[in-house]
Amino acid sequence: MSKKPAALPWPNLQALIDDHGSFVVGYVSPIPCAAIASDQHNMLAALVRRRGEALTELLGRLEAAVAKAYDEQIYTDEING
Image 1 (cartoon, one colour):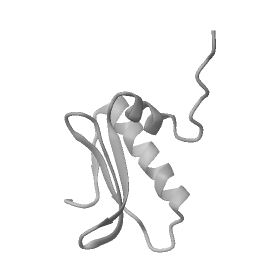
Image 2 (image 1 turned 90 degrees about the vertical axis):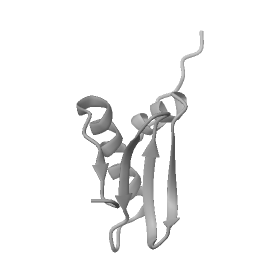
Image 3 (image 1 turned 180 degrees about the horizontal axis):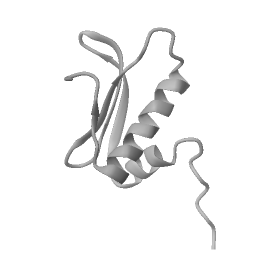
Image 4 (image 1 turned 180 degrees about the vertical axis):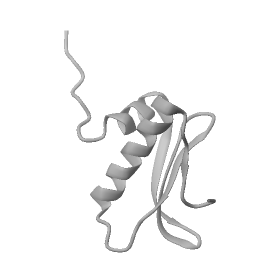
């Protein structure tokens, strides 16, 4: 029996995809760079990339925000307030 490898360092983003959710990273007018994660029913997180923030740092924050949504039902929205 083969075991699925861990999706380190982003296991919650992998779980989101496995559960038919998605996330996008990129330009969302008028925001130069955002990261948005949604499951089949809700937006779980919407983050704005900070000045000087590396892409890996943004993905790390998205991972943490998705975990918070899964574990605590707290949804992070930096775009809409």
